Image 1 (cartoon, rainbow, N blue to C red):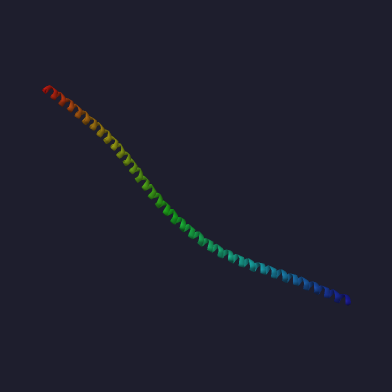
Image 2: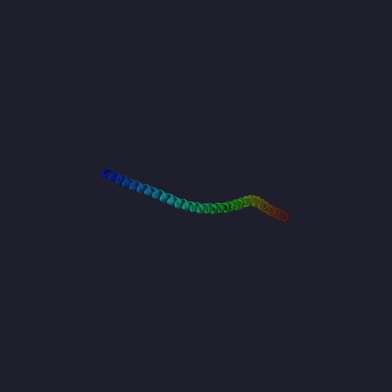
Length: 129
């Protein structure tokens, strides 16, 4: 009988150790699941915050793109006006040069006319004498 009692004690010890391992394993699994749940919830919170950030960035990009389009249109308009101003300035410069040459030719002709007039006056005066 002594052998069966020792065998029963050994089986109970083994069952106790086995059940302790099973309880330990179950508690570890439950702990892991709980930690995973906490991690998943924190990831969800981070994702929500990131989605909000993405929405804000998207809105800023839309606003910036709109401003860039406005600036591009303004720049294009100013560039066109500048080109028109340059063309007008070139025309004014050409007209000024033409007027300058006309004034110079008129001045030369006037000088030549005065010289001829003086020469004729001198000839007339010499003939009267």
